[in-house]
Image (cartoon, rainbow, N blue to C red; front, side, top):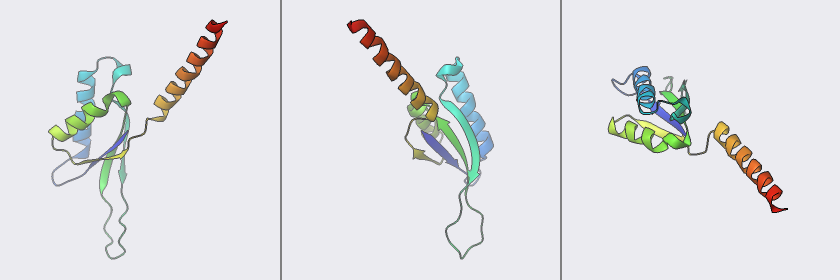
Length: 113
């Protein structure tokens, strides 16, 4: 899942992002059980030609499947302006599922004989 945090009046994206990372580390001691895979910064482009303003700044988080509910609850309870831009599994998760499915199919066919 991909979540974007948007800049608002007195919201510092770096501070809020760091707080989310800290909440993840506090809740999940083992790195394999962490909610967040990665994050980055970006700017949306303005679609109007009338204004020459820069777009809205955001910080984007790539959230693992196991952390979807926890991250959304954390953002909502802290009243952070966010948008979910994709509900799809991260590429690493998709590859792991495909490998697991492929391994399970091979092991069950060997046991049939």
